[in-house]
Amino acid sequence: MNGQCPQFRFGNDGQPCTLLAAASVQLNITDSLGVTVPFATIGFTVDGGPVFVGGCNGDCGNVVLAFELAGRFDIEVRALGFRPATRTVNVSLDDVGCHPVTQQVAVVLERDDTVALLAGVWLTSSFFGDTVLRFGDQGQIIGAIFYDQTIGGDGNFYVSYNGRPIRGVAGQPLQQEQAPEPTRVGDVFNWQTVTLGIPAGFQNAQMSADFQTLIGMLSGQAITYTRLSEAQIPNAIRDP
Image (cartoon, rainbow, N blue to C red; front, side, top):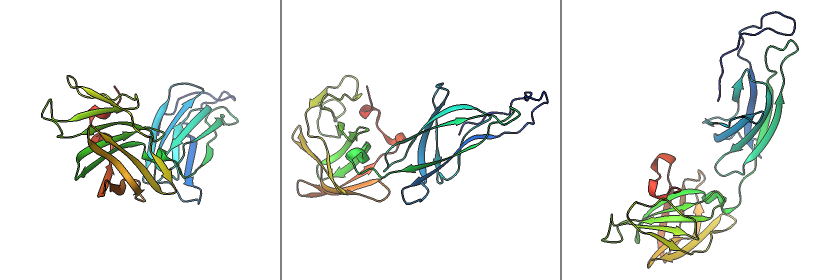
């Protein structure tokens, strides 16, 4: 994740250290069944310094956090569908004081059985029109965009729920609304409200195994939501 070139230095014995790029920490990230997690976001600090953020894509079985760094590593691992996990590990130099002694760290992630699995931004095209919903890190409803619902401005409604503002669009009103928070029982999610006369949300919805699709009902109509990638998220639904 964070590579440094080997530093030329002398060891405790006065001899020059070899130009070896030794790993400081290697992570093995799995679920509770021992299956390697394919994707994760990893953040860490060394001795309380700046936060380094990276991740693993496709295989999180042998993730090197840094080379040639010693000190206290405070690590946080996040993966969609799992609860965040933290680890702290102290990395020391070898006996001659040249290179870090690589620390192997196992991180076992527990499945997230809360509404936090909704965290992110979702898009649906349905009988009621195109709608974007945003949920926060704990699954709380943040805001919405209702596309092509008005003849004013750019034709869209921008909505902030429960006092949690979104960026909106300059020159257009940001509608303030109250709404219930999402609920989850087992693998079934529910969140429903009516905003400016438009039904929004989902009833008895289930999420796909890859966490990218949510399928349920809304006011008697089948509805499907797709999770947007970071690059696809409209600026108007982001934080102010």
